[in-house]
Amino acid sequence: AAKSTGRGKAMLFEPEMRADAQRRASMLNHARRATEERRIEPFYQPKVLLSTGELAGFEALLRWRDPHGVLQLPSAIQAAFDDPRFAVAMGQQMQERIISDMRQWLEAGLEFGHVAVNASAAEFRRGDFAERLLDQLRIAEVPTRYLEVEVTETVFVGRGSEVVEQALQTLSAKGVRIALDDFGTDYASLSHLKKFPVDVIKIDQSFVRDLTSNPDDAAILMAVLALGRSLGLTTVAEGIETAAQAGFLQAHGCNQGQGYLFGRPAPRDLTVDLISLWKPRL
Ligand code: C2E
Ligand code: MG
Ligand code: MG
Ligand code: MG
Image (cartoon, rainbow, N blue to C red):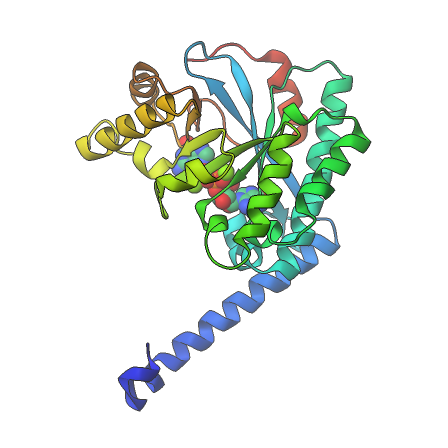
């Protein structure tokens, strides 16, 4: 856009563009080194059944340590999730660790429900994503029903969407559940729910945040819950921080909830305690 508005304007944007490029390069560099040095690990955040407060499962969220050992969020290496050179290696390391954790939990008789992993479009567009994941599960002897894969609607659009569709069909046919993450924020194209084998819709936290004060958000939530119900999908709301939000969602038939009210993302060792000591919390 800067180009078409003439030379002067383009010049004006240049320093800003250079800063962006530098930030991006720094993110990619951090992601590459963290992956190589195995400073990436999954944290687990509980998901509860809103009807009873029982543990439904967990979402695995990427955490990484910077070269000083300080724990960092995914947003600090955001650019790496969109670049296949980095996203694939990072994802594989996450999946390896998650499957190994599930293996140990199964051996210990811990009832963790399921683990949902996030996968980016860049990972999915690699033709072998589904096969690799299924191979890893098989080798670790973790039944596919323990795994859920979260994708955002961005994986459905643009180049490579046939590859994505094939991968989702393969996973789904083998019993891995597919969740549509951040539902309502990007395309919210209802045809995606028909075309792709989606089992779960995760309602984005932006609709949950002001749910009790913003009637529009409440209306959208109720409509999405009704849609999920009539399509036979499991509905999950993320970002639940207050009992009032949980109460509303429960009253309107949302199946599962996730958020600081129930638990923050935690490292594996704490998660083991959480699973064995879980008391219905509502
Ligand atoms: P997401 O998949 O939508 O994950 C939910 C985000 O909401 C997480 O942020 C989680 O920590 C945060 N959250 C959970 N409960 C609450 C709450 O009650 N209040 C608030 N304010 N936030 C809450 P996080 O861990 O920083 O992850 C951000 C995003 O990074 C994720 O959004 C996901 O898109 C991406 N991501 C995380 N791990 C992975 C991964 O292993 N692979 C890929 N491709 N993406 C990942
Ligand atoms: Mg997610
Ligand atoms: Mg989400
Ligand atoms: Mg989100």
